[in-house]
Length: 207
Length: 429
Ligand SMILES: Cc1cc2nc3c(=O)[nH]c(=O)nc-3n(C[C@H](O)[C@H](O)[C@H](O)COP(=O)(O)OP(=O)(O)OC[C@H]3O[C@@H](n4cnc5c(N)ncnc54)[C@H](O)[C@@H]3O)c2cc1C
Ligand code: SF4
Ligand code: SF4
Image (cartoon, rainbow over all chains, first blue to last red; front, top):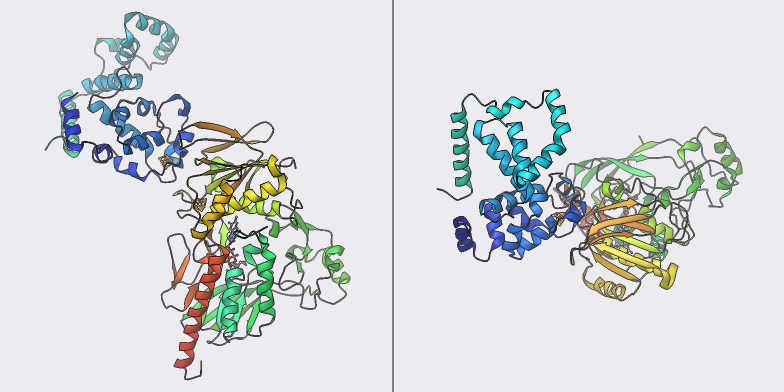
């Protein structure tokens, strides 16, 4: 168990709802859910995930901490906003789902190898390095995330699209040599560090 | 403009539904002068358009008849139909009201023989039947209409039908020269018994009321079930006229929803429970009613009614707010959602869907006197100067029983106001 996770367990004991209210973005809305089921029935991913928002919110209230944080459901959310538009109680459901994903990730409880999570991580690491997304390196990292053989297979499968992108000058093969960056790379790193510090304070992890 | 026809000891009641009729009669039977103003061509309001009444499953004609008899026997009430309040000025004890009168084109000579209707040809969508049927341009609003006079639809003026109607009438009751007029009157107190209207079901986009013929409102269902209604009491569905046996009721259609009406409309749970009786009566054991609900809200004594319906094997309950409706190739509505008891995903086909639409104040969208106090949904709570009162469903979504109670209370308050006015003027109350 990560240190942050241990601290959270010690602090909130069995009151997972309180924990979510304090620490998850828009978590204070969870108690407003009246369990009508509209979000569950409106989600285009509906049948393909285990826990619909309706169910997740009830599980939070029932204190099912492990199950909620380890669920891959919130990672499946495509941000289509159907549920937000229809919820009769106006819960910002999409935001809560992302908030939960973020919180689970930070506590080290998010499901390992969950593809959306992996891609998010690759994207962030790529972006944070130079302040610009290196499309080529990002695509390669994505293709090879499941090993060398799968990576080659992915490359071959995507060959046509890659060539098309290069022709349209949307993908520059020279990017492999480092690629374009922000002028003030150090400035970007400092800015990100500062933003993280503010966020930590806001979330109550640092003073 | 016609001169004043009342004094500041008069009580004005706006709206001639069960609430307004009650308020007017209670005050008049205490000896007060009352003017009862109704926008439509007849008194009766929404209650006259229902098939049966919970909790006793009685016919609306029964309650109406009693009140109409009281009204006919009372000289203190003056009824004005096709009249709408267009402005109120002044204050408690001394209001000036402007009424707008719409021409009926039929005077009080009318004996309701119906010869004019037989003579004309043009038809309009029948307002009393929520457009489910057509009626001739000369028509009687309904069999319990008060006053019992025919009405000519304004579209008849200038057509050949106008002449035909006039020629057919043996009593010289048709007056094609009637004009719209405004009337000014005085009143000491005003009772707003303007009632409710159904929430516009087309606004609930995922339910497709505007797209699917077999998705109807609870009010339309009342008309289908009525033996005097457009289908003679048969539950025939609109798309193909086939008998509907497997019927879904969707609760909270537009109520308890921040995107629509915030409040619980309170009556719709009871209305759907009542309507399962219609299905049973029409189809017997082969009928099937399914109620989709968030929670069933029936108030105090009405709980017994709910228990009885729960015991009916042809009625089932699904705890879920339906997420969306689609139509299959045969025009059957298919309901999609997830139930809260077990989180099962369903896609269930029915013959007909009845939306238990919410009730909102009839006055929503029209300009009311600034002095009136409204709640967050627009229901009337009273007035700053304590000279105007709400009664019946204008004050909150109430059933008939509670509308009548609220109307009696409003009448009492209005009486107190005119008493005080009289005392202040040195007259005897
Ligand atoms: C589907 C459904 C089923 C129901 N079934 C039952 C039942 O079985 N039993 C029961 O007890 N209750 C039932 N109700 C509730 C019942 O309809 C109301 O309690 C009742 O209509 C309230 O009467 P009211 O006089 O206050 O209002 P209304 O019946 O709405 O009457 C208001 C009157 O005021 C007039 N008016 C409005 N605005 C103006 C204006 N500006 N100027 C002049 N006149 C105006 C209107 O034309 C109307 O005649 C049901 C409701 C619904 C939605
Ligand atoms: S739609 Fe809103 S109120 Fe209904 S179950 Fe989902 S979150 Fe809860
Ligand atoms: S009475 Fe029932 S159907 Fe109507 S709004 Fe309330 S809970 Fe919903």
